[in-house]
Length: 112
Ligand code: 5GP
Ligand code: ZN
Image (cartoon, rainbow, N blue to C red; front, top):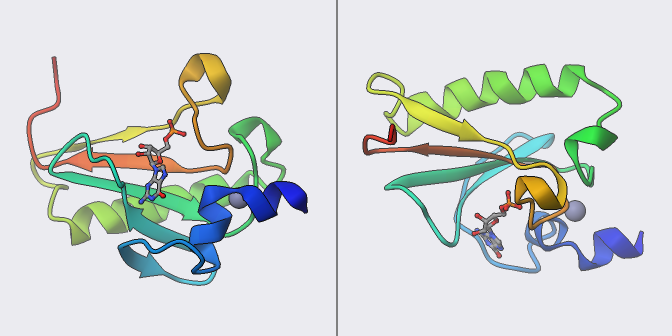
């Protein structure tokens, strides 16, 4: 419980930290990243405090999350030209916030 108390995304979920929320269905919410790496940079986040992908028990949640990613990409109008989904796992993967989330980046060419 203390992890959830101190978790940035749990604080955002509870409304204790302001965010630009673009979607909310009670299971997932979507916010704009505070430090965008592309013109459109969204974070798709389950309300449940699941620290990392390795802690996901209900793997069907990942299917629902990707269905939402499709919907979000359409809403942002990045679906036709294309976009990138990024998911960082634990420290070597570059995960900074230990509450499951997927980045959706688009609005400019991202291929190197
Ligand atoms: P990670 O490296 O864990 O995959 O990415 C965490 C992301 O959360 C980063 O892109 C960072 O900019 C974003 N972030 C961290 N704190 C906040 C916040 O308070 N509000 C919002 N909207 N994004 C945040
Ligand atoms: Zn959390």
